[in-house]
Amino acid sequence: MRAALIVLLCFCINPLIAGVVGKEVTYASDTLTMHGYLAYNDSLSGKRPGILVVHEWWGLNGYARKRAEMLAGLGYVALALDMYGNGKQAAHPDDAGKFAGEVSQNLPLMTSRFLAAMNYLRNDEHVDTSRIGAIGYCFGGGVVLQMAREGVNLKGVVSFHGALATKHPAEKGKVKARVLACNGASDKFIPADDIRKFKAEMKAAGVDYKFVNYPGAVHSFTNPASTELGKRFNLPMAYNAAADKGSWREMQSWLKKAFAGK
Image 1 (tube, helix red, strand yellow):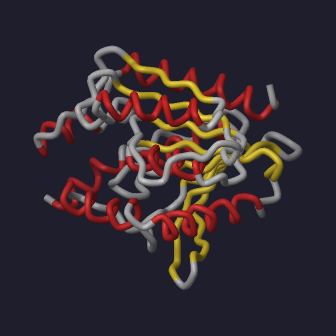
Image 2 (cartoon, helix red, strand yellow):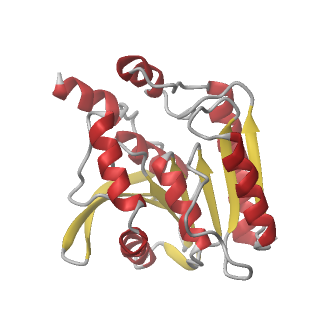
Protein backbone atom coordinates (compact mmCIF):
# COMPACT_ATOMS: atom_id res chain seq x y z
CA MET A 1 0.00 0.00 0.00
CA ARG A 2 2.73 2.49 0.96
CA ALA A 3 4.67 1.79 -2.22
CA ALA A 4 1.54 2.34 -4.29
CA LEU A 5 0.90 5.68 -2.60
CA ILE A 6 4.44 6.86 -3.22
CA VAL A 7 4.04 6.07 -6.90
CA LEU A 8 0.79 8.01 -6.96
CA LEU A 9 2.26 11.00 -5.17
CA CYS A 10 5.20 11.09 -7.51
CA PHE A 11 2.91 11.79 -10.52
CA CYS A 12 4.45 9.84 -13.39
CA ILE A 13 6.91 11.91 -15.38
CA ASN A 14 6.67 12.02 -19.16
CA PRO A 15 9.81 11.85 -21.30
CA LEU A 16 11.84 15.04 -21.08
CA ILE A 17 10.96 17.89 -23.43
CA ALA A 18 13.38 18.07 -26.38
CA GLY A 19 16.64 19.66 -25.27
CA VAL A 20 15.70 19.67 -21.59
CA VAL A 21 18.20 18.16 -19.18
CA GLY A 22 17.11 17.14 -15.69
CA LYS A 23 19.37 15.96 -12.91
CA GLU A 24 19.19 15.15 -9.22
CA VAL A 25 21.34 17.41 -7.06
CA THR A 26 22.15 17.88 -3.39
CA TYR A 27 23.05 20.97 -1.40
CA ALA A 28 23.23 21.87 2.28
CA SER A 29 21.12 23.94 4.65
CA ASP A 30 23.09 24.24 7.87
CA THR A 31 24.11 20.62 8.55
CA LEU A 32 21.15 19.07 6.72
CA THR A 33 21.46 17.54 3.26
CA MET A 34 18.81 18.86 0.91
CA HIS A 35 17.79 17.17 -2.33
CA GLY A 36 16.77 18.98 -5.48
CA TYR A 37 16.02 18.50 -9.15
CA LEU A 38 17.66 20.92 -11.60
CA ALA A 39 16.27 21.28 -15.11
CA TYR A 40 17.39 23.43 -18.04
CA ASN A 41 17.39 23.39 -21.83
CA ASP A 42 20.80 22.29 -23.04
CA SER A 43 20.13 23.50 -26.58
CA LEU A 44 20.06 27.13 -25.45
CA SER A 45 23.16 29.28 -25.00
CA GLY A 46 23.80 32.11 -22.61
CA LYS A 47 22.52 32.81 -19.16
CA ARG A 48 18.79 32.85 -18.46
CA PRO A 49 16.41 33.49 -15.54
CA GLY A 50 16.32 30.96 -12.72
CA ILE A 51 13.15 29.79 -11.01
CA LEU A 52 12.75 27.95 -7.72
CA VAL A 53 9.89 25.44 -7.54
CA VAL A 54 8.53 24.77 -4.05
CA HIS A 55 6.65 21.50 -3.63
CA GLU A 56 3.25 20.69 -2.16
CA TRP A 57 3.01 19.42 1.42
CA TRP A 58 3.79 15.90 0.17
CA GLY A 59 7.45 16.85 -0.26
CA LEU A 60 9.80 16.90 -3.24
CA ASN A 61 8.14 14.40 -5.53
CA GLY A 62 7.69 13.77 -9.23
CA TYR A 63 5.10 16.51 -9.59
CA ALA A 64 7.51 19.26 -8.53
CA ARG A 65 10.17 17.75 -10.81
CA LYS A 66 7.74 17.76 -13.73
CA ARG A 67 6.97 21.43 -13.22
CA ALA A 68 10.72 22.17 -13.20
CA GLU A 69 11.02 20.41 -16.55
CA MET A 70 8.11 22.41 -17.94
CA LEU A 71 9.80 25.64 -16.88
CA ALA A 72 13.03 24.48 -18.52
CA GLY A 73 11.02 23.91 -21.67
CA LEU A 74 10.05 27.59 -21.52
CA GLY A 75 13.73 28.58 -21.45
CA TYR A 76 14.29 28.96 -17.72
CA VAL A 77 16.66 27.15 -15.37
CA ALA A 78 14.47 25.59 -12.69
CA LEU A 79 15.32 24.01 -9.36
CA ALA A 80 12.66 21.93 -7.63
CA LEU A 81 13.88 22.32 -4.07
CA ASP A 82 13.55 20.43 -0.82
CA MET A 83 11.96 22.15 2.18
CA TYR A 84 11.97 19.08 4.47
CA GLY A 85 15.54 17.80 4.14
CA ASN A 86 16.98 14.52 2.89
CA GLY A 87 14.32 14.47 0.17
CA LYS A 88 11.70 13.45 2.74
CA GLN A 89 8.22 12.72 1.40
CA ALA A 90 4.86 12.00 2.99
CA ALA A 91 2.48 9.24 1.92
CA HIS A 92 -0.39 10.28 4.22
CA PRO A 93 -1.96 13.70 4.94
CA ASP A 94 -1.18 13.35 8.66
CA ASP A 95 2.54 13.14 7.91
CA ALA A 96 2.33 15.81 5.22
CA GLY A 97 0.64 18.19 7.64
CA LYS A 98 3.28 17.52 10.27
CA PHE A 99 6.18 18.09 7.88
CA ALA A 100 4.64 21.26 6.43
CA GLY A 101 3.74 22.61 9.88
CA GLU A 102 7.28 22.24 11.15
CA VAL A 103 8.44 24.57 8.39
CA SER A 104 5.46 26.93 8.18
CA GLN A 105 5.54 27.64 11.92
CA ASN A 106 9.27 28.36 11.96
CA LEU A 107 9.99 31.36 9.75
CA PRO A 108 13.79 31.39 10.31
CA LEU A 109 13.91 27.70 9.30
CA MET A 110 11.75 28.31 6.24
CA THR A 111 13.88 31.24 5.18
CA SER A 112 17.22 29.48 5.65
CA ARG A 113 16.11 26.44 3.64
CA PHE A 114 14.71 28.58 0.85
CA LEU A 115 17.85 30.72 0.69
CA ALA A 116 20.08 27.62 0.63
CA ALA A 117 18.27 26.46 -2.51
CA MET A 118 18.34 29.94 -3.99
CA ASN A 119 22.08 30.15 -3.44
CA TYR A 120 22.56 26.80 -5.19
CA LEU A 121 20.51 27.97 -8.17
CA ARG A 122 22.38 31.27 -8.39
CA ASN A 123 25.67 29.39 -8.63
CA ASP A 124 24.58 27.38 -11.66
CA GLU A 125 26.53 28.39 -14.76
CA HIS A 126 23.37 28.80 -16.85
CA VAL A 127 21.63 31.27 -14.51
CA ASP A 128 21.38 35.03 -14.81
CA THR A 129 21.68 35.90 -11.12
CA SER A 130 19.93 39.25 -11.62
CA ARG A 131 16.73 37.45 -12.62
CA ILE A 132 15.52 34.91 -10.05
CA GLY A 133 11.89 34.01 -9.41
CA ALA A 134 9.92 31.37 -7.52
CA ILE A 135 6.71 29.41 -7.89
CA GLY A 136 5.02 27.15 -5.37
CA TYR A 137 2.10 24.77 -5.01
CA CYS A 138 -0.19 24.51 -1.95
CA PHE A 139 2.31 24.51 0.95
CA GLY A 140 4.89 25.76 -1.53
CA GLY A 141 2.63 28.59 -2.63
CA GLY A 142 2.50 29.79 0.95
CA VAL A 143 6.29 29.56 1.13
CA VAL A 144 6.95 31.73 -1.94
CA LEU A 145 4.43 34.32 -0.79
CA GLN A 146 6.15 34.49 2.59
CA MET A 147 9.57 34.82 0.98
CA ALA A 148 8.26 37.77 -1.00
CA ARG A 149 6.92 39.30 2.22
CA GLU A 150 10.35 38.87 3.80
CA GLY A 151 11.95 40.92 1.05
CA VAL A 152 13.97 38.10 -0.54
CA ASN A 153 15.55 39.37 -3.75
CA LEU A 154 13.15 37.78 -6.22
CA LYS A 155 11.81 39.40 -9.37
CA GLY A 156 8.52 37.56 -9.27
CA VAL A 157 6.69 34.86 -7.34
CA VAL A 158 3.64 32.81 -8.29
CA SER A 159 1.49 30.88 -5.84
CA PHE A 160 -0.79 28.11 -7.10
CA HIS A 161 -3.57 27.20 -4.62
CA GLY A 162 -1.30 28.32 -1.79
CA ALA A 163 -2.09 29.53 1.72
CA LEU A 164 -2.70 33.29 1.87
CA ALA A 165 -2.81 33.88 5.63
CA THR A 166 0.33 34.86 7.52
CA LYS A 167 1.56 35.86 10.96
CA HIS A 168 4.24 38.02 9.33
CA PRO A 169 2.52 40.38 6.87
CA ALA A 170 4.31 42.39 4.23
CA GLU A 171 5.70 45.76 5.23
CA LYS A 172 5.49 48.77 2.96
CA GLY A 173 8.56 49.10 0.75
CA LYS A 174 10.03 45.74 1.75
CA VAL A 175 8.67 43.45 -0.97
CA LYS A 176 10.87 43.32 -4.07
CA ALA A 177 8.95 40.68 -6.03
CA ARG A 178 5.89 41.02 -8.21
CA VAL A 179 3.30 38.71 -6.69
CA LEU A 180 0.76 36.54 -8.49
CA ALA A 181 -1.68 34.36 -6.53
CA CYS A 182 -3.71 31.79 -8.48
CA ASN A 183 -6.57 30.48 -6.36
CA GLY A 184 -9.46 28.08 -6.75
CA ALA A 185 -12.71 29.97 -6.20
CA SER A 186 -14.21 26.86 -4.56
CA ASP A 187 -11.15 25.99 -2.45
CA LYS A 188 -12.47 25.11 1.03
CA PHE A 189 -8.98 25.50 2.52
CA ILE A 190 -8.89 29.21 1.63
CA PRO A 191 -11.60 31.19 3.47
CA ALA A 192 -13.03 34.31 1.86
CA ASP A 193 -11.69 36.33 4.79
CA ASP A 194 -8.14 35.18 3.98
CA ILE A 195 -8.56 36.47 0.44
CA ARG A 196 -9.87 39.81 1.68
CA LYS A 197 -7.01 40.20 4.15
CA PHE A 198 -4.42 39.17 1.55
CA LYS A 199 -5.59 41.80 -0.92
CA ALA A 200 -5.67 44.46 1.78
CA GLU A 201 -2.19 43.45 2.94
CA MET A 202 -0.71 43.63 -0.56
CA LYS A 203 -2.35 47.00 -1.24
CA ALA A 204 -1.21 48.49 2.07
CA ALA A 205 2.36 47.31 1.47
CA GLY A 206 2.43 48.78 -2.03
CA VAL A 207 3.05 45.41 -3.67
CA ASP A 208 2.67 44.94 -7.42
CA TYR A 209 0.32 41.98 -7.20
CA LYS A 210 -2.47 40.16 -8.98
CA PHE A 211 -5.01 37.76 -7.54
CA VAL A 212 -6.86 35.38 -9.87
CA ASN A 213 -9.80 33.25 -8.77
CA TYR A 214 -10.65 30.28 -11.00
CA PRO A 215 -14.40 29.45 -11.00
CA GLY A 216 -15.27 25.94 -9.86
CA ALA A 217 -11.68 25.05 -8.98
CA VAL A 218 -10.97 23.44 -5.62
CA HIS A 219 -7.72 22.83 -3.78
CA SER A 220 -4.73 21.41 -5.68
CA PHE A 221 -6.39 22.13 -9.02
CA THR A 222 -3.11 21.99 -10.97
CA ASN A 223 -2.10 18.44 -10.02
CA PRO A 224 -3.67 15.58 -12.05
CA ALA A 225 -3.04 13.22 -9.13
CA SER A 226 -5.11 15.31 -6.72
CA THR A 227 -8.49 13.89 -7.75
CA GLU A 228 -7.51 10.36 -6.75
CA LEU A 229 -5.76 11.61 -3.63
CA GLY A 230 -8.86 13.54 -2.64
CA LYS A 231 -11.01 10.44 -2.98
CA ARG A 232 -8.52 8.24 -1.16
CA PHE A 233 -8.17 10.53 1.85
CA ASN A 234 -11.61 12.18 1.75
CA LEU A 235 -10.14 15.63 1.12
CA PRO A 236 -11.83 18.43 -0.90
CA MET A 237 -9.22 18.51 -3.66
CA ALA A 238 -9.35 17.71 -7.37
CA TYR A 239 -7.71 18.47 -10.68
CA ASN A 240 -9.25 21.15 -12.89
CA ALA A 241 -7.82 21.20 -16.41
CA ALA A 242 -9.17 24.64 -17.30
CA ALA A 243 -7.78 26.25 -14.14
CA ASP A 244 -4.48 24.40 -14.53
CA LYS A 245 -3.94 25.60 -18.10
CA GLY A 246 -5.24 29.08 -17.37
CA SER A 247 -3.00 29.59 -14.34
CA TRP A 248 0.05 28.29 -16.22
CA ARG A 249 -0.58 30.83 -18.99
CA GLU A 250 -1.06 33.54 -16.37
CA MET A 251 2.24 32.55 -14.76
CA GLN A 252 4.11 32.76 -18.06
CA SER A 253 2.85 36.26 -18.74
CA TRP A 254 3.55 37.39 -15.17
CA LEU A 255 7.12 36.09 -15.07
CA LYS A 256 7.90 37.49 -18.51
CA LYS A 257 6.90 40.96 -17.35
CA ALA A 258 8.71 40.56 -14.01
CA PHE A 259 11.98 39.53 -15.62
CA ALA A 260 11.70 42.25 -18.25
CA GLY A 261 11.10 44.84 -15.54
CA LYS A 262 7.84 45.98 -17.12
